[in-house]
Structure formats: C-alpha cells, structure tokens
Image (cartoon, rainbow, N blue to C red; front, top):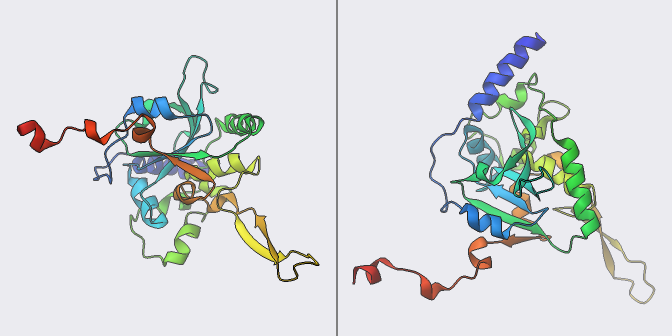
Length: 252
C-alpha cells in the first residue's frame, strides 16, 4: 500500500506542478534587474503559474503562491545566484535565478539582520536541501485539486496545514519561515500585551511577541510583514519617469 500511495502521490505531484496559462497581475521581473538587486537572505515571492499555484493564491487571498530564500553563491560555488526552495516533487532544492524567468516576482528584505544571523539562516537552509515531501500522504495533495474550495475565509490558512505530521513542506513559505525563526527574526509574530509593572506608570503596558507556528505561514506573510522591506528592482536601478517612451510620443 505504501508503494501504491507513493506512486500515486508522485504522479499527482507532477500533475499539480505542471504549468497552466493564467494572466499575471503584473509584467515579469527581468532577470538582470533581479540579479543586480538581490542580497543574501532576501525572500523572493513569486506569482506561480502551476496548477497548485491557483489553489494557494485562492486560499491565501494573495498574488503570491511561492517563496524562495536567496542564498547567493553560498549554495553552489561558481553559481552566483542561488535560491533554496521547497518543491512538491523534488523536495528542498537549490535552483538558479532562471527558474523564475517570465514570472512576476517581489523581493522582501529583512531589515537590520546581523551578519552572523544571516550566515546562520543560510546554513540552516542548506542543511534542509535534499529533504523530501512524504508523497504517501496524498491527502496533502488532494486538497489542491479544487482550485477554489468552498472553505470559510477564517479556515483557509489552516487548510494548508492539514494532513501529515510535516504537511506543509510543499508550501515553500514554511521552509523560509523556519529559517528566520532559527535566529528569532520576526515575520508575523503573535503580539500580546501585559502590564509593564512600572511604579511611575501603572497603566503602561508592554508588548510580548510569541512565535507563530511555521506551518501557518503563507507566502504573502513576508509581503505584509512590518519587519521586511519590499524592494522593487525598477526603482533600485535608478528610475526616471522622464526617460520612458510613450506610444503617442513615438508615433509623433
């Protein structure tokens, strides 16, 4: 039964990973602009075009269906632009920038990250390379067969965490969240308040951050996080609106 479930899971994973045409929300990000802008530990959010991407975008109510951690040349010597990502079929793997050609992307950058922590994040991520999603747990893949499942909004995030004990390895944001949590860098922590205990200010409160479980993170969390800066390569490269060629001006 395990062999049958694994074979079916592999077939289903490959089917869900196939590209299907869909209109993107913005033009693709040029590879050269991304390469010139990226820094190690940047998170690249991607508007995917696979079958599984449609469901993830619906469940997360977001443009983004995929997240990858940029590790630069730490991954493969001689390969300057490497990412670590989680794939349904291939598991955790190293890929190049060409993997995202033709796709709308966004760079989210952790702010004020210490160099020692940057290295720890990358080391933690590299250790995960080679780990595989347990394709015997086909229930984790069957949920993606319905692009827009009739699930109440408050349950959609948790639907991504259904299934086996390590179910969300197919959701790449889980891997990226674990990397940052390894150095206690915040993404979207649970914020609680408690009395500050100050004699001079009895009504003062202080915020206490609690770690959100990594299985509940989705790609858009890095976009909306107050601790990640959104980087746009077009602006970073020196944008000048006066240099744009408009159709009416060209025709004249």
